[in-house]
Length: 181
Ligand code: FDM
Ligand code: MG
Figure 1 (cartoon, rainbow, N blue to C red):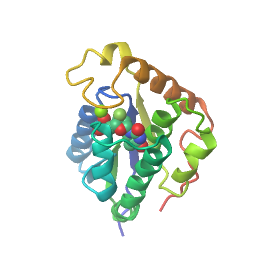
Figure 2 (figure 1 turned 120 degrees about the vertical axis):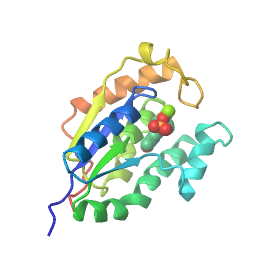
Figure 3 (figure 1 turned 30 degrees about the vertical axis):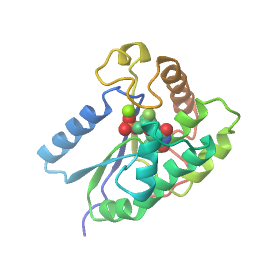
Figure 4 (figure 1 turned 180 degrees about the horizontal axis):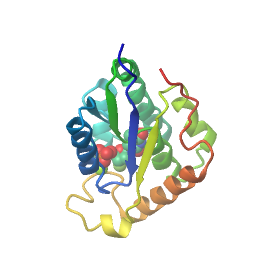
């Protein structure tokens, strides 16, 4: 029987270098003989992912509550696959997870309550480790590609950054009520 893999989550603002760090972590784990796979949210290849992709590229408009629930549904779609991989000893390096879900929606400041935002995340798998890349929005705004998608404005990224910090200070920072497989 293999040991359960670890669920490692990388979070941060847009263009904060998450994808590069995820690849580095994956490579380092594989070099040490630890089987690991990369998972990325949103997963734009699923049914919910197609709609999320359109929303992010500004070719579809949806109410804030609907896109919030779709992002969460997108994680639920992969839940059993993730659980199987972890049970089979594969470590998962996950580029964005529930923290992005809550931080980006809360940053909209449109009255969506924090408890309401967290609740669809309850029951998803609980990360063993969350790494937050603390790159200031003033730095990321100069990066190549910044500004191409819906949330990529300096003002909004600053709000997201503050929401991430708020969440990481909280006692439930690693716990959305999920359980380990
Ligand atoms: N995003 C991502 C959310 O608003 N909620 C979520 O639950 C997730 C996973 O989608 F602006 C936002 C964050 C980002 C956008 O993500 C696309 P990538 O990592 O930049 O592709
Ligand atoms: Mg982005």
